[in-house]
Image (cartoon, rainbow, N blue to C red; front, side, top):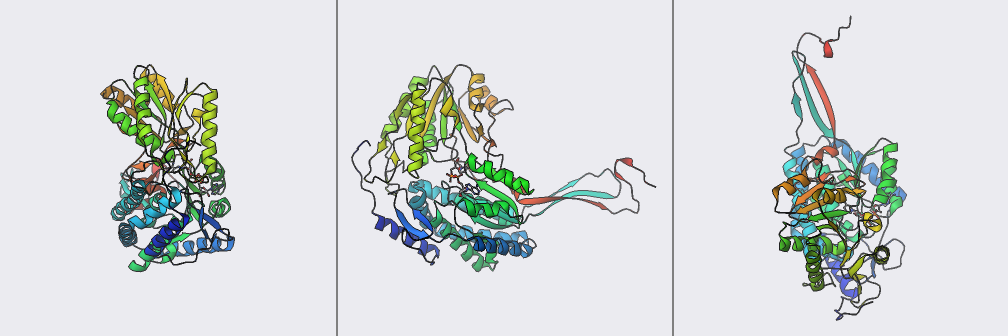
Length: 514
Ligand code: NAD
């Protein structure tokens, strides 16, 4: 372990007090056990210690939660959409009032620096506002009928219970993306958060229940079940769960997708990414480097949209790498609650081991590794690392895998075609960007034979999407779309209606029958 000047971390008692203050502020007054008791061990990556034990949901309780949500659906689906929007609007107001409380819990459990944790809660507020507007804009289509005296149209109806499974790294925003949109669409929600972030989930549940009380909505429209994979499987296999929206690793998606398909349920998958940026000779390098450093090192490399591959024109590669390495040396790594910290901890020891292993493999493949050492910030059971730039001789082996850590592989290219082929040559397809001032290069990157990712940006990094657009990715990222634009359609069922207001009975395609 490399020893830098050792900043002090908060004590576990400080962290417990922060957690309790935040939980009480949002209205959670339930019981939490002491570490080691039976249940989920709510730990913090800040020190690696367990803060509390949270009761995990039993199979019977999960069954009850799904049954309650299914029952609530029978009335919620016919509640007018703008009235449903009032619930989400109230949730948004409570989130504004409790932004710092919830952000503190995100920092405690996911290790995000305060600014990013606040940003995550802001994303929840944004999606609530979006969903309130949406509650007055759910629309169908009227289509020209081929038959006289007929009207052809499409209408959209609520789907049923939406099961939401979320990952540790966006412990609150991903629930909100799903819940806010699903609730205005007339669905009810059962949420299984990551077993690594149970406290933030308790806080969100307290807020949605308060919002429901405040507007007179049935609290059963949004239920919480807590636990690991086994409790998530209850949602996967239950035929009452009409849509399963699952966010996490490709490994999880491979397990979940076929099981839901087996029962002909709907599935919305938001899985891992392996995001690249192309830097062309015309790029504004100062702007590019700032964007690259945030995308690659922010959230300690633990975003699905984290920049993991840099594809740089060979003529500027040395310059770009030097600038990034210089910026990395300046990045304060440490306590995510501290004002000046920009890189917090990795989530756990396994994440650290995965990073070490990936760097070993890269070295064996001939890479030059700059940075990446473990930082001693005063606690052996917490894992703080310096972000790493890894110059690869080619885009091979380990570069094709998503390692959830701040590793930026750098490769060079000669022609734009080659760069785009490299961008697309990984199994995942979430986010991508190009840094260029050449309009032809930018347009080519966005064209049908350009980036194959769900997100393709120009002159901004791969991470930090706005909620107004549809979010999601192709290939092994799962194909799902969430959040803005017309993503709401995934949460509703479509009905095609033909209405005959004539006195004749003409058949389609000119068919005569009797
Ligand atoms: P993970 O796959 O380990 O766990 C995600 C969730 O799935 C957890 O709640 C877990 O309990 C549950 N789960 C795992 N296996 C399951 C199964 N067989 N049945 C039911 N539930 C199951 O992921 P993680 O480590 O928490 O998060 C990091 C991963 O998530 C990365 O790969 C990241 O790219 C991805 N991610 C993707 C997006 C996106 O929008 N594309 C967003 C955030 C995170």
